[in-house]
Image 1 (spheres, rainbow over the protein chains, first blue to last red):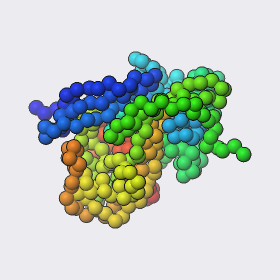
Image 2 (cartoon, rainbow over the protein chains, first blue to last red):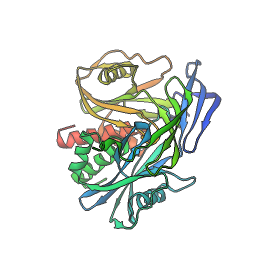
Image 3 (tube, helix red, strand yellow):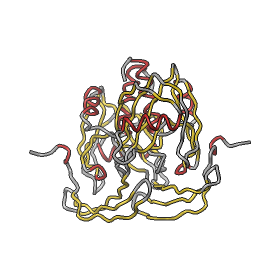
Image 4 (cartoon, rainbow over the protein chains, first blue to last red):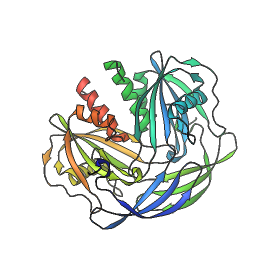
Length: 185
Length: 185
């Protein structure tokens, strides 16, 4: 029986480790294609991440921070990478509290998605959190950010202005709009 | 006057080139944080990409291919990376035709988003294409894929089954659902 998840499998001939960093690592895999030819695949390994659509009355919580790869600051939903062995749901509540000070016990999974499956294995788990209770933010020592609550219309305006321009936040805004229209998420 | 896009800027002290590949390159930037401390940022450079929500009557066109970073095959909307200096709209129509054989002259921009702004500069341009005309597929020589047309309900089922699990395709399914509900995209 053919495993449907292995269709067109590219078998690894050899893995060439290139770099191991604090957050990502990089390797080049030499693979055998379905036609027997050989090719290389450049692969970034990432520990996985979480992000939170945090709803406070009729607003969502966003944070503004500098994104070095883009050389600009961006408005995004609270997010962060998984610690080793950490449960994604726990990580989502942890990142929300660290970045914004908000806590909650009402959290639901929206979806989990690979951010860039062509070259990276990063899997991002997106949650919606309601019934927020305000506490105190405790960002990481190398993390500088500003927290804000915005309406759906403001979020859509930020997308047009490209102050919001990352996949997870645009995805969260779509999910929120669908939630308002259909009552489910 | 403060540039709003430079809030919490991290100034580059030194860039350490690590790797230059066929598709991505990797560097480590040593940066000065807003508090004067020094930190490192691991940054993947990517040429940018395009993806297409291609609508054929009441179905969307998807392709199944093996994603080596995930070690499994995935169902995704047609997509690919930008050639050097290529216009994204042109690239979107080129990738659609190469991967599926479909052509069109009715194309609209949905959104452009950074797939993973924490460690990569990849910007993905998402388009919707209608009025498809069938021609002949011409995938790249190291590209093996299978084309299919699925309904919105099938797409949502694929998401639940994790046969669809990448950001751009889930984003396209949300956009399609909103298009059906609101008439605009």
